[in-house]
Amino acid sequence: MKLYLAPLEGITNHIYRKALYECFGGFDKYFIPFIRAKQNLNFSGREKKDIDPENNQGMYAVPQILTRNADDFLRTASQLAGLGYREINLNLGCPSKTVVTKGCGAGFLDRPDELERFLNHIFANTDLKISIKTRLGMDDAEEFEDLLEIYNRFPLEELIVHPRVQKDFYKNVPNLEAFEYAVQKSKNPLCYNGDIFSAEDFAKVQERFSSVDCFMMGRGVLALPSLAREIRGGKTADKDEIRKFHDIVYHTYCQEVSGDRNVLFKMKELWFYLAPMFTDSKKYIKKIKKSEKCAVYECAVNELFANCPFNITAGQ
Image 1 (cartoon, rainbow, N blue to C red):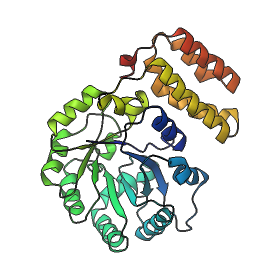
Image 2: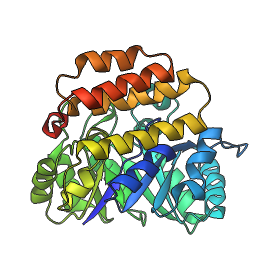
Image 3: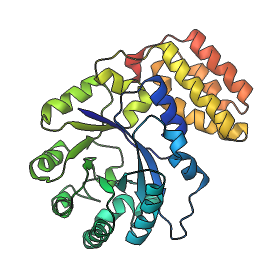
Image 4: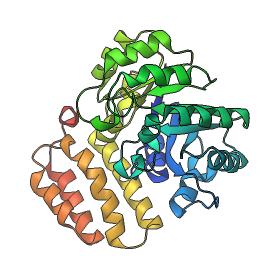
């Protein structure tokens, strides 16, 4: 059984991944949120930190590329290979409208002929392992049959399927019938991704798709950082572990990000997922959300940990 951490833009950056790896572990691969392939080959500051091998020590990290230009993909992949990466993931799943309107992410699925030409070009010009993270299509799950035929023509490292269409974003429920079709028809190794929020959720998916041995989790990990460990038979996180995890993330942001406002923006985003772990926490979460200075934020967090009962089932 293989467990993967999904790439979530703006959240599962190198700071989050390192803290998760140190505190809980449990993942076989840690996917790096997408890098925008550009003709000028310049990585942003965020991208440079995310792909720096020093920031991914000990873990098997896989960079993800977002583009619809094959030459840009190949140039970026070559740069990543120079840093030591041997596997690259192609993002065909991002549902964001700003991405989709440019024909990238899930938007590329609406251009199947262009997508096939893209894949032909990159597979003919690189020896790197290429995996794909895909949705079922843009508007209708029936689109997936034609897309899977295209994927089957190429030797993918693996095909990671999030069984929703673009217009679903993260609403509705995963289309398990469509994933069943992939299990029956895919010529490439499959990985399931979608709505695994607990060990019980995982057990249900694993039971239904017993021939699949690879599973990716994203939002479920944000709400329960020990999820992979728990799936493997380990213990659920306790309050002290969540405190340690929080402190590592927070202090690293303080070191690497300038300005209280920017640090707190990242931490408030994290608390959106962690807050349900604590009962009777409403007034403390409100203080956290309203804080504009790190000193005020730290007091609010200390009060929450000191006064709120920890109920991990609430976080699930």
